[in-house]
Length: 638
Image (cartoon, rainbow, N blue to C red; front, side, top):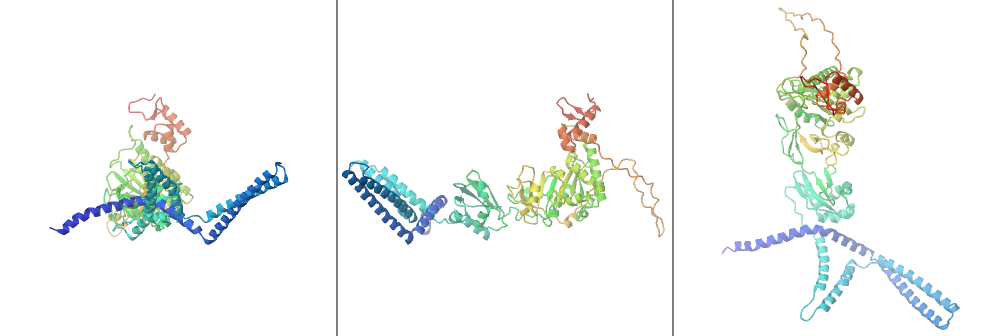
């Protein structure tokens, strides 16, 4: 017989049962910990008051109270004797006895109040009070059981209920004082081990009162790919909002690093809050260098899921110097210039980024180049808006009519450029593209280091109002973070001014969507230069426009230029009239005067006049319910 195997069969169930019991006690102990903590705090308070000075004061008060009671008894006897000696209630003897009794009673009440105060200053021990309290029900319970019992049958329920209450009190006290064994995962870092130990209920409850957090008890910590998560039970006066306001005290209690990201939010119930410590990133170990067509822009640091930014989304990208803004945006630009039906335009007054894209993008560096390319884009937009068929919201892209991504690398420089009256039209053009060009598949991506709307800011308010896709790497101030995401959008996420650098960003995909952190793809200038050439967009010139005269080579060592062609005076490009803007907006899908006003930025009165003129000319059809549309081929406007 294999004695070792037999011994294992016998001991394994026992170990399993003991483990189950230990785990159950570990679960129950945090529930009883607040009770034990209050008990010990009260016991310590009482013991601290039981000093020799307070004892002497109590004994003196007891003496004075006993003496006052004796005086009252004597005064009552004298008053009774005075009544027997005289039947006249107004006699001097009876009046003197009455006065003496009243004075004795007043003195007794004073001594009684002093005794009560002395007893409070020298209280009985909590253990003695517990014995007295349990005796109140234990003794009557035992007597009741004895009286209700007979020789044949015994009634023990009064005594058993009393014994159960005593056992419940003692058991809760023992469980609350029990030290829970903290099982720490071997894969945790030293910092995570320390945080897990301090989030343990036994440690938390013992030290919570010191930080003003009494009445809160955390549940066992859950280890996730993004860090440590625990649910905190809120008792008494606590609400999730009040608990969140104590974030500095919570950080101090945990001894967490100042720059460690800590999120506190409401839990699944009104009396619950959730603490998340981002000690890890789900993006750790994922290679985000380089770029290939279709590759995600980054990885969510909480879920580890790839994050793609769909082409054709107007976007705001903010990030202070050194945050990795240029490295992060290059993957978006490479994607926007890769396919046959996509083209890229880079506006970069600083020149540094634009020169990297000259082999696959239209670049504009000087003020004249920026003005020229924005004029071309606005003209292209109006041409495309006229081609949108009824029933469609956007033009269908193709190699002949590609989607054009317009990337403004530094918004503050472009805004500063437009302060010159000769180039004021630059911001007018870009504002028009932001408001109206999405239907024409001309998409604006605005990047800036200074996301403010003041005199030196890097965001134009009209352009910012049209952009829903927003990304921010590390910013300088909380005010800049609010400009990008709004006052309440970062409540559920990380504040952009607290992001580490470089390459960590907050991305928000819509006005109501929460901002969530991602690690962005890194793309170096050398990687950009190594990309293959792609067609560069230029607006097609109208037929009949003469091209510049080519160079003519002459035999021999010398050469000469061909005679220049006759100069054609440059015609100023006329800005579209309100009527043309209104017609284009209706063609793009706007159906009411209010819609047209929102799209074009023209006031409603001017829009109404333009609509009336277009309806009278038969260029716009106005239905009985006021809906506006362009006439279908062959249709005659009424």
